Length: 315
Image (cartoon, rainbow, N blue to C red):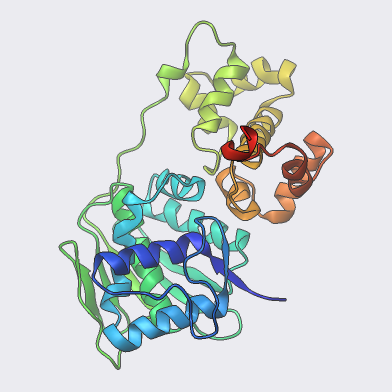
């Protein structure tokens, strides 16, 4: 089976390199496009060739800086889901779920996590990632940590402890140093989000309020206890009052399906991005649960109900 990379990631790489004064051709040496639409899939070999060429000509430092463009990218449900994380550990857990959805041949494995540090390794299922690929993923993760409010992030390459990120600046790793094993440290993490008291408005019944709270961060690991805390109720009271609507599980399933249907109808985001952003565990979970509620697979639903582009709709 052919393997593909995220077009959004390749677009971010292109934008970052352009901002650093590094030109990137519109096509690679085989003629494959390097400038896809935001939601396209790019052949994996094309992405790897692009990164390897940049690393060969300019070193790893420009690739480590790729994550700095994330705050400037157009709205994207996957990025929104990642930056809704509440702790570094939560962020890396979400990243792992995203990897499962996009069938990444590489994984970020967390070996150790505490309140002050995290050790992770970029590994491959059949072959190890190239240093250029390590650099891009590390740069993106550093940017995401900063975007969720983690303070004074620092990164060293293990096992030798070479510092590659500190004081908001990257340093190029030594040429003979491994680039796949990372130790992240920080001084403080984001404060817990306050209970969503703003959701408790009189004209909404409890199920509707619950739907709004859940929909605000569907990729979170929701439990009855978490939702009850947001709504200012005890878990038992919440369960009892949601029973007419099928209970907590049914309300959560509805919120996910509603969000997925909206993205399928109104955007061209790949199914993996849709599933991840809506809190499903993996692609089979998305397909199974969405079909249970709509009698259609996500792909069939998009084919049947997707809105045409504005220029077609008004033609």
